[in-house]
Image (cartoon, rainbow, N blue to C red; front, side, top):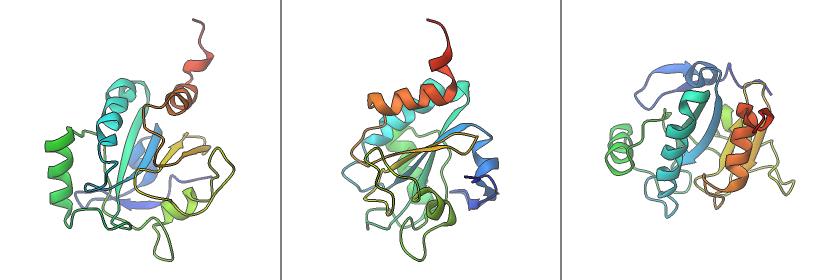
Length: 166
């Protein structure tokens, strides 16, 4: 799946592409929402960014108000994420993740099945898609925390950690 050329706009309003924004890194793409009960996952996402960022990994936060739990403006989202969770990873503008108006990135990502074999609509905020630069993708549902063993193992595998000798 070639996602690199998909146009996307940063939270600061700068047009770019998925490939330019992720810089050829392994990326954990997460639809986020500031007022969601799962928002504490921001802390775990930031920890992943700090742990693996210098090894070719990035979290990409994708704000969405699809479930009516995101703040109104990009400035408010940026302030909340920075002040509340210390977020340093890149974020996009607010987009739709489901339906006819879904962003092209999510139209592509939602074709990927989860561990149970189910593809399709994003279930809720904080659904995660781990994207390898070669285009392979793994999907984790919202209640799977960013620091869950299956997510960390997949990140390490995608970064090549699983191929090193202990």
